[in-house]
Amino acid sequence: WTSYARTSKSELPVNLYDPVERNGVLGHLTNLPSLANQAQMAMDIHNGNHQNYKPFKPKVFVNKDMEHYGIIPTQQKMTPQAFSSLSPKKKKGKSCPHTAAHMQIAYEAVAKRYIQALLPPAEFGVQTVEINVPVRDLLGHNEAVFKTRGKRVIDEGWRAAFPKKGGTQDKILPKLSKGENGKLKNVTTKKSRTKAPPRYTLVSLPKELELVGKDISDPKYRKILQTAEGIGRPATRSSAIETILKRGYAETKKEDLYATRKGTDLIKYVPKWLSTPETSAIWEDYITKIESQTDDQTAVTMRDNFVNKQIQKIEELIDYMNKKFLPELGERIIQAPKQVSEKMKKAIKRIEEQKGIKAPRGTLSDPMMASAFLSEHISKSNSGGSFKPSSKQIDFAQSIIKNLPDGVEFDNAILEDGAKLSEFINSHKKYLPPTPGQLKFLESVIAKLPAGTNVPDDARKYASECSKFIDKHKSQK
Image 1 (cartoon, rainbow, N blue to C red):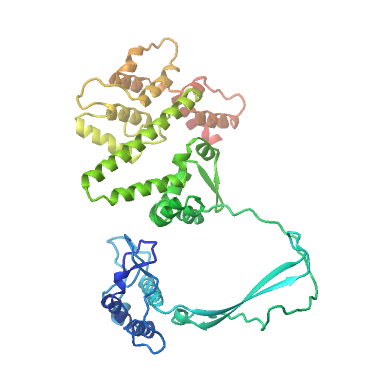
Image 2 (cartoon, rainbow, N blue to C red):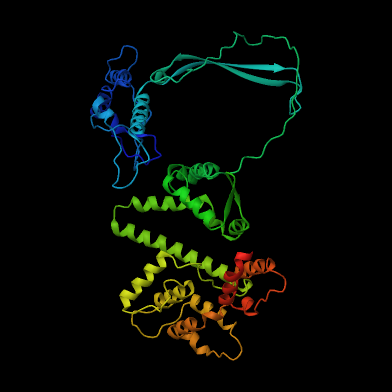
């Protein structure tokens, strides 16, 4: 019943102003009592049959390429019977969040806006008055200038089609002439302070991303971002903000957004070329140039050059960040997930089927075993022979090696063989040290236990023993 809905555009392509297109839609709308008179008026004006208004091309119709234009009623014939029978299509077994009444309200809203766009503009008479008052102004001038404006409706135009409650209120000033004097009765002053701009919220930030071009000084890039409607798209901006929150770069307090230390560090160290709106404008401009190519091979070459250049710059940035920060991070401890997710289970079963192997007993329930199994077999070559262990697998094994008790030997050559390293992890994972979180929780449990309760040394040394002690005593916390 309406054109494509997921669009932020409001303009319409000029071909939709063609009499056949225009009258087809308006003709259907005259079938609905709530829209009939207004739709007929719009049709009469543009067909040259209205006694008060001449035909004109509304500004909403433009000559420019658009993927999707403003939402309007389609040529599908709408009748009172069709309107009353509008109902949502429900998927089998699923509830539907909207009702027939919602659909009727939505269709009427779209139809009303379409009719209003075809009606004449409203006209107003405006009266502007400047008054010079003999008092010192904020800048130290001996006279202060005050302005006021009166406004009255001459022609309601499109506003008259579906008037809002209360209508347009006239503000009429007394008749005045230039140089006329008035009597100054009194002067009052008020001291106030400016307020800092409000913080961004989950609602305001997507709109700011859409309008980001307004703050760019270069007119070329500003225009590109205005045409591209800013950074991202309406359907992707909110999900991008959710990702920023999920990764800890920002947090919410009530409805406001605050940058975290992690977020400010990111801003500090990511180079300008990767963090400014101008980069998006440059990319958009280059993509437009690719799109305009008539020779496919030229377009493909331009595309590949563009992609390769970005890959090179990103790899250089990663290399720079690694050299700058990795030596300062200290020992890296890889922690297994708290539980085996459904995604991990599916991956394990897929590896079993593809390689004709059976995962060790407990792999589907033990997070450490699941992580080790996936690290081993995802990194393994298709040849089925010996393979190089992944860096995560080595880091995981190193955390066990450093915690091995006296008398348990380890051959460093195993670190070069992924299969042997996986076997070592499976057989020695009981020596994995507890995580900082485990130790913190352990100490909170111990603090609540009766004085003199025996705490084995291994509870603070091995993750498995730590978990056993916690499970045994946490009910007494």
